[in-house]
Length: 307
Image (tube, rainbow, N blue to C red; front, top):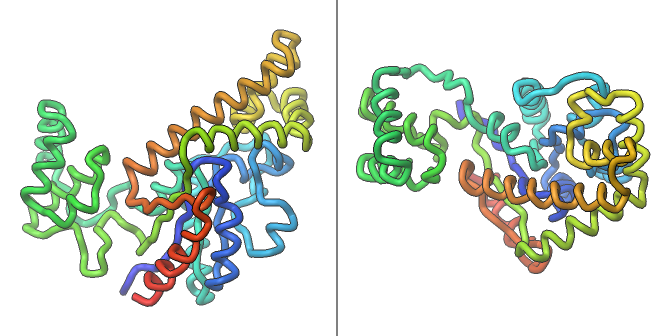
């Protein structure tokens, strides 16, 4: 039985993931699954850059407003819910489109993080973990390349977990983890991952502007609501909220708090880019400066769905 096909739109904040996800859903009979750790919370709309009511009316969205502010939410919760949704959406002959920037959540969905396959050989895994410790990740990747070119070409050298898994299976079964459909035994789905980005200076300008717009649209009120009612909630630790708490205490000025939100958002964007570049097989597009690339992206989706 072939694995379900899904599209993922990933990348940092302020690059147009929401708009592209909606356009893809409209064009390819899709439904959107939010891959964001904060958009699950009710009442937190502005600081989470949640799709607006108007945007949500343009395409079916899932995993938005599914938790109360005082509840916790984990990668495991997301994986469980999103798996069920993918099954339901696929059964309706529609295309699941995961849109978000929380790398751990999306990777845990696309890959079998529990390594629940049938082949497990702890002693072999330990051998390669020791090899990694003694020789480094580049040498580990090169070792895989010598033994299994196809799986090495599909795996970034920083994704040592996947490299060790490939070596482990190859040594004990004589078979590559790469399967006939191009997926590996770690892949839960046939996925096409598109990353959105733009040059760093422009990205940072867009992030700074977005934070200012959020502040004008009511971000401060959302942060104050959290501060006064749920200061210790998991949601209160999110970027865009926690930075205002010292301002509410009279410890810093409002301008200083906004600058902190901008700084932390830029730092997070950098971490997001690193995650998606190093850990996932992402194809990158700059639709900010090169909007014409969107047609190429659409063509790739069409080809992927036709396979």
